[in-house]
Length: 87
Image (cartoon, rainbow, N blue to C red; front, side):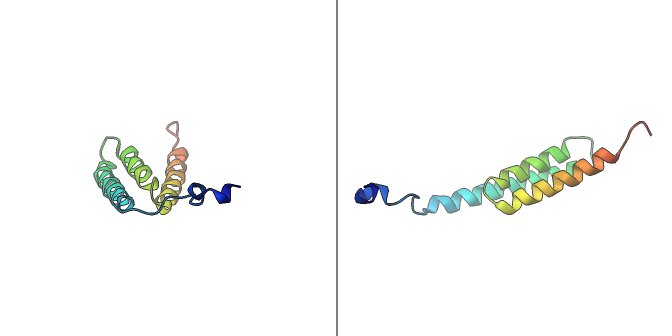
């Protein structure tokens, strides 16, 4: 009976221009945060945290950014985990 109701026919709303502007805005913000974090990596500061934050912002709209974030996190944890301060 749901097929008889014309309001139930469309499950997803049609694409609008705001989707493009939202995706573009998130891309600009995410890339800016990453570019701020990269120079801070060798300095004493939260460089990696800022880079991961930028990738998390990008991953909210782009699947590739989520894959990059996960791969970078595994690599980072592997490198940090191998350093033993007792040795």
